[in-house]
Length: 399
Ligand code: SF4
Ligand code: SF4
Image 1 (tube, rainbow, N blue to C red):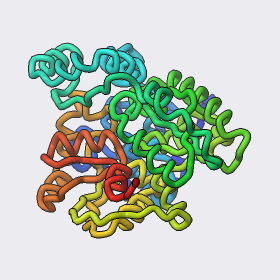
Image 2: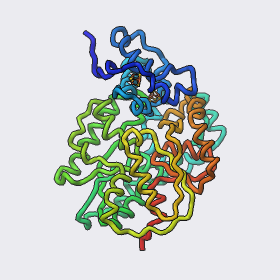
Image 3: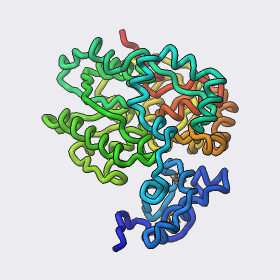
Image 4: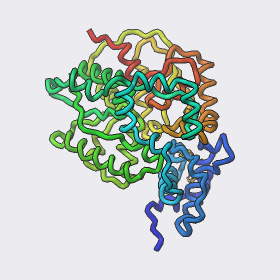
């Protein structure tokens, strides 16, 4: 019997708009594009799995095709599922290491000085490329210790606030960049809101990208269980996130792609700029003038959620800030995609126009909500790239 999990492919009207918007199909002939790899091929795959072709690996799951599709075909979800169900399941050490962010993060924060030093060396990059097929690009650095440890040592007195949120910090804040989590606590405390954390595991984005679907499901069940517990006594309590991809995963990928019931937390999940923007009118923190030019790059997954409007709205509140909104386009890194040697050139080619535009504007700072977009832009331009909260905090008078 044919097992059809997602029949949205049947809504395709063959308009080809999705292919026009696919950043990968635009730069390489190796990938036929979303229409062909998604709805067209799915009809064949469900009849005969042998008709699958290896080009599926070039889809970077940016979801731009889904934004463009007039028939609401879940194109990227169809492709991700096909990658998992039909392509080779042989073990890849490279994909295992790229997708186990909790494992790598625990090790990285334990041995950060040595690891940060060695990953910068040309020789290390050469070895990683030769033996693991990892592209010779710059790697994120690790913090010394985790954000969770810092939180319990310095910020646990959050019960003093009557209003609270649960903060899903994600791997990036926990292992690579504590500053964003600390900034969130400073800003929300100033707004008289306490920040609680709970047990969490990697949201699953890198696991999905590397076809570790069973592990992604386990993490999703774990996260839903603990987040639901943290908001169970107060239905108005929000779950806020500072990573746009984690937010997208918790809200949409869990249900649509992993089949994990997230109804107990769905309504409470909010990306941080939306949460602050909606509270701003009732809070009177004072913003100082920032006479600078900021170029804003909207990450694909935040666009898919319809969340960029809040980040832009928030940044526009900063007096004096000249905000240049960059064209809506993928930066090319797409999480772990740009770290795979076979995707490296595609990843760089996708981002070319974006880097060119940033260099043309010559901003004082680039702003983006996604950590991997930050890595990609920093590697390809000479500009500082910060999270919207970081820029907001620079304008807030905390005294
Ligand atoms: S998810 Fe992105 S890369 Fe994949 S088919 Fe859609 S637009 Fe192309
Ligand atoms: S945009 Fe949607 S309807 Fe048009 S070809 Fe692509 S999947 Fe089909």
